[in-house]
Image 1 (cartoon, rainbow, N blue to C red):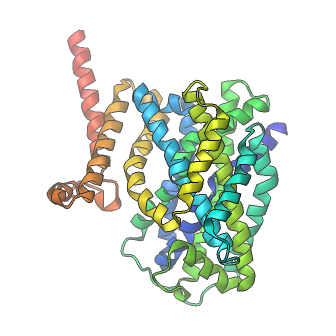
Image 2 (image 1 turned 90 degrees about the vertical axis):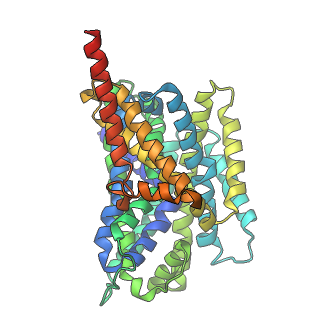
Image 3 (image 1 turned 90 degrees about the horizontal axis):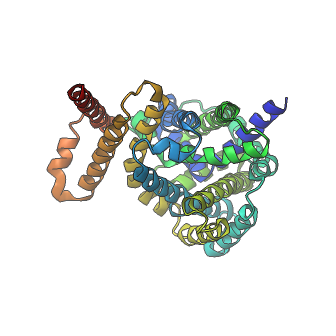
Length: 429
């Protein structure tokens, strides 16, 4: 009974940490632009968010429970560099500022337009600092005190939407709904967060008395399934929310404005307050979880030369400053960065899941290196018009129209390193 309770508590807390600003603003807008093709939108979004995140948690648990054990098979330096990049992305450079910015634009601005953004974000990140300054028991704090409020507000919006279906659902505003949804799944950052949150799960498990590796792996996997079962339901509901109200939503609205318009359609002025509660708590739970995880990572990386408390304060200050740029500006800069990083993480997850079948570990560096090379080259070519010929050549790769052109280089990288290993082995014999 105790084990079942722990699985549920950790799973619900994981849901609260994952389900933050990006998770709330992307699905409704995706539903609006997909219209009657909303099922395709759900499949595309689930591919790079829910499915990838569950596989990431399983891969981390099977590889040893830490990001280092997960990524060091490519190389120790790669593990450190990629770990730092991911932590900065899900921490003070992208995800954390976005939580503060979304909380202001959707939770405060519609109700109290005279409150300046810098004043709200100062209070927001100040309260977050009080929560995370002592990480002990952070999982239970999130699950017990914050998650119920978040879930009640979200379920109210989703159920109300199901009870008032549209007579005629609008046609899709996109030519390729699945691809667009596939890329939107990157923006939530859940896939990156999943390979990191395993650390905070293990910390909680050790506090609860689970010391052997086998039980830690089993509970981690089960807790991950609980978390993403809830997230899957919420995502589906929010995408359908957008699709159901698409005909009444004008084009040209940004993501936060779209969500506000959808809720106003159902609840009127009362909905503005419901959105405020939902947004602030969705973002805040993620802020608490991410700040704790990133601070602990840099503390361990530096052998505590950068203390946990110092890291927490620094991360909070940087997040506060960048949050005042606004949501759309943060999302605009995050897209190209995520398109470079995500494919490498995806192939690394797959390799770790099938690690026992990989005889030659050099395959890791071949696959991940080729994937990264393609993604970085594509980013550079898209940034400079003078490289248009190279960009056009890259676009000829299979699956590029689905933003998976890196798949061919990944396969060739794995094949070439395997062949090189066999040749070397035969010569030695």
